[in-house]
Image 1 (tube, rainbow, N blue to C red):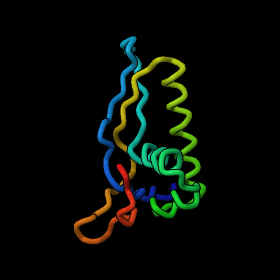
Image 2 (image 1 turned 30 degrees about the vertical axis):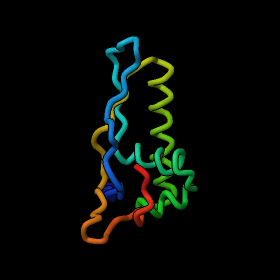
Image 3 (image 1 turned 180 degrees about the vertical axis):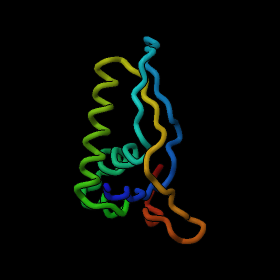
Image 4 (image 1 turned 90 degrees about the vertical axis):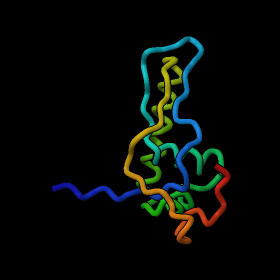
Amino acid sequence: MPRPRKCRRVCKLPKTNEFNPVCGSKDTVIITVDEFETIRLIDKEGLSREDCAEYMQIARTTAQQIYNDARQKIATALVMGSNIRIEGGDYKLCDEDNGKCCCRKKCKL
């Protein structure tokens, strides 16, 4: 029996969950919310993979795999001119109201 997947901590859902090229492609690449979060933390916020893993409360190797999967999907969408949709994944949103925000209020999303 495989090990159960651990939920990844995500600060907030993305403001936009779908991106479409001007050409109007019918193909869609699905990026999960946790994959989006690794891209946001590493590429936009400039965090190291270790810091990203700490924020998401997962192992560094897991964060690296999620990040690699997300970059592969984005590259495929850009090269093929596909739509990108952000949905699904194994994640848990931070609970800012109860003081349990994983990003320690540093999010710029």
